[in-house]
Image (cartoon, rainbow, N blue to C red; front, side):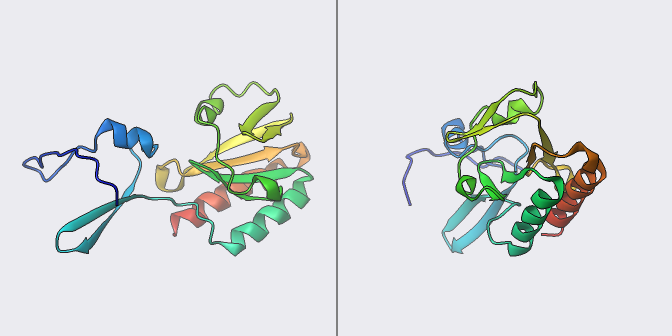
Length: 165
C-alpha cells in the first residue's frame, strides 16, 4: 500500500475527510459509495463501490441479445469504463472524462466515448441509477427506434437488476 503522508482528524461524529487529491486521483465524486473494510486490528481500507461489475455473464448475454433486437450496438458502462458490449474491443476501455457531461449536452453528433471508439449518430445515452444513485450508463448506437418499448424495458431491467446486487 502506498503511503501518502496525509493525516486527518476524526470529528465528534466519527467522520474523516478524504483529501481532495486522493478523491481526484480515484475519481470519487460527492455522493458516490465507498466500501469500508477492516483488514486487521489497525487497518481500515476504503474501496470505491462499483455496482456494475465485470463478473456477470447473464448481463453479458443480455447485452448481446439486446443489440441483436435493436439492430445496433449496446454498451453498458460503470462510471469509469465500458463493462459490457456487443463491440468486444470496447470492453474494459476507460470512458473519457467529459463523458458524464455529455448526457446533459447530448447534441446527436459523432462522439468519442473512449480514446479508440467514436459513436455514430443516432445514439442514445441513458443513466443507470439503481436505488437512485448513478451507477453507470446504457449507451445505444444506431438503435432501431421502432423498439422504444424494448429500450425502456432494458433500462428499467438493468436498474432493477443492479439494485439487487
